Image 1 (tube, helix red, strand yellow):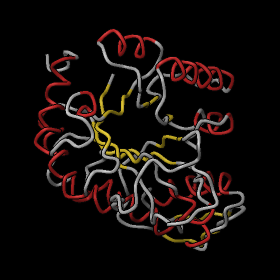
Image 2 (image 1 turned 90 degrees about the vertical axis):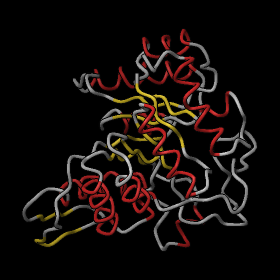
Image 3 (image 1 turned 60 degrees about the vertical axis):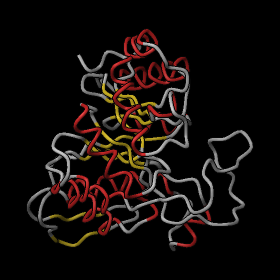
Length: 286
């Protein structure tokens, strides 16, 4: 099982210190969330809370993940970076492919593309992108971007995007694609790619999700070898908890160790101390 530090709602410059510490302490990766803007008023309910309210307060930092990864890659040696999650359908596929590919190149292939189809209609409208058919557009964007990241000439004809003969240099190292979402459609989509990223969830629910993905992949004659199931588990505390999750197919954990010790108001120094303590308590530093 691999452990990634979630950087959601941290101040942008603080992430630099957290990344250095995570790299030094032996963590496997860093999770980087994505939103372009945070609108004051929304009619669209947030889908991951019971009352539809957003989890963050106004003026929380949402740094561009690709600019941030380009910077973090220069101050780390082994840490991987995953977006949790990036919304391609909010963007032009060529600009997105260029940014993602450049970040992956600068990170020597340590980039993992976690994506979602998006939930905020108002953000789509602000960025002049259609909210409808965003799932199909996302899948087509992935297909197009994968071609753009390869060396040589590319041509593409899809339902939503067409590319004349062109090339995008420099080519990018291989970039695994993980799909976020909890709906059955999202899980079926995730089963066709390289992995799944969950939202805050219990061990039992994560194991149930892993089993569903396993069945979907089996039906498509796809194995679970090298398939990633990444989840932030809300009720995993002990070594036994994480062992149970791993035995059920959870391969990666997203976590904020300071939430177990110092709490959300922890200073940067306290967060780093708690990251070290977490590894010790779970016997990860052996």
